[in-house]
Length: 570
Image (cartoon, rainbow, N blue to C red; front, side, top):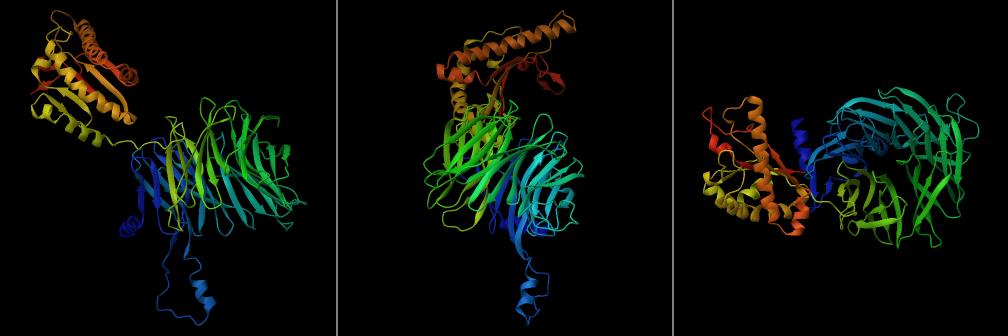
């Protein structure tokens, strides 16, 4: 097993572009990521599939006199397996795990569980549907295989308010009256829904459709527990979009068809914060070019906004998410005759476009899914293809609110090393120490405060000026990684003639005054631009004598009367 892991890591390479948070996971054969989410530890998880070649377990000396016997022996040697990857804020790959199934399979959706694990939905290439429940390390808790006796395919797995999930996809029409899902009149492919409880118990399975080719695309739960289903109906040269509302038990409430002269392709339906719904589609124009179309509607199927976004090239948004302020981020593709790029689009609450960016090389690149992160950035997952390659790779990108690629976080070790270089003279002369937790302490006796004093001396002011002239520009240069600069005031524990309560409170006030004197002196010496920026990161606090300096179990009162600094990263 150990040898396998080592070989696996050797075969797997991770490419991260400079300081951009753009991670390409390059493995042999075609690979892709199809859905993405954020973990409770702020890492990013994505699922999809990777393809690999499996060595035959048969004796290599076997000889075959019949070509069909040989083909049978290698029929399952190459194909996709469900893939889970995790990436930390430094763009490091912390988990890269293929879930080995008895049949080749692809994962198409991932949902977080309360225990920081996952529900993963997908399908096998022989037509079965799969739901996995995984722990936070990607280990299987349970594995449910389900579906009809026909060829089934899952398109999404939807999180429900009771902790369960809804699988939506399509199934080839049943033609056996012994199949409990058979309904007279259904034809070709049918919409196929299956609901599971949070412990993996199947609650119901139902088919819906017409005599034509119907496929379930996506679904979302409404605030009242009913479910909105997005699907397509194809016949002759037409493809129409259907919205269906069903009860929590799968009974139809209403249907609404969207018909057009040109082909419509739906990708996503989401519930908005105002309890209305939004559908992302593409519709071909008179030049046969795909244009983005967004439809906002309410629970009673009334259309509130029907917006077409015209772009220079064929474009589509395969996934879309809403921010807390009602604006939206969408990801997908944009293509011309020779090239497909990944598309990122920012929209306001009225569905007007604010920004768009294209990413990728001169080949096939696409974003399949997006999730909004805790800090209002977004993460997208998809496919990246190198310029001179024919093999697709798994791709994860972190995005800013203006659709640009975010920067990787810097490890605290890197910041520490840069600070040590910056203040090497002060450290060498014994006037300062910098710890690996990014705390900074002054060691020169001229920099300590006298008993009960908090006003800065001339020597302290001169030293703080030299110190801040180095520190503040450094923090400003690395501001995308800096969350807080703490300036903490400290005291010794004595206060003659007072009881414990009074002694602590007086020292607490004194420590806050020392912090404020230092903070205000540094702040006043900055230009207006730096001052405006510092208001976002500066934090002054008084710690009384809770962090007093101890030497050989005795308090060093002189060194305890001080200020200290601490840098906290994002």
